[in-house]
Image (cartoon, rainbow over all chains, first blue to last red; front, side, top):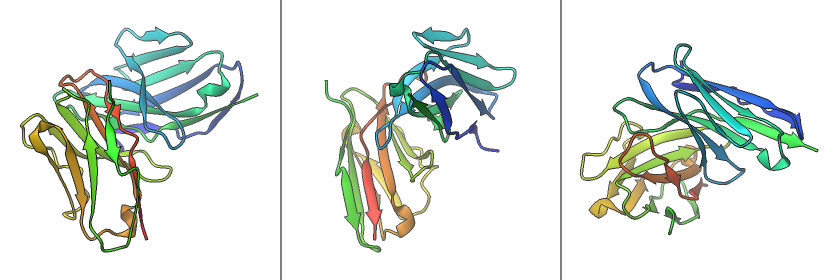
Length: 110
Length: 114
């Protein structure tokens, strides 16, 4: 089983739609969680950290479920500019090496 | 301030040649990571440097791959006797010494082995 798993998609949604991605992780000792965004042929950039209590940044909401070992990303009111690959990132306790999922591709169309 | 800088941005090399890829991290960042990303794939961890500690080389795919970090700053990833399967984008990232901080990536070196 891969350490971090994501549905590669693509998720093809119209503008204004709400879309959600899940990511599962295998190491129960994982302590830090993030969502990164990667545009085509660009480097990954941090979208948001994921806290135990969940967090929201504008149209984006991230949640952590430790019992089921998954994190989620919800995007409301999708924009064309949200089209990208969303990477789930997990760091285990005691390790400072971020482990990346393969990413979920989102395509927002007019 | 300046971000993570990688050079060259593109490199085409013949099979069997050696290549060196350079990464200049953000000033003051003690952690430096190398990843590679093949077309349509996720990021594959290669090596991790933290300050003056011994690097974590657990992700290096073969002994043809090596990396060093001089003076706790600039890092060089060397691939000897390149093979076609080494073709990928090699990404460098740096972060401050904290398990919950952002890793900042360079724009990567696109390596093509022909």
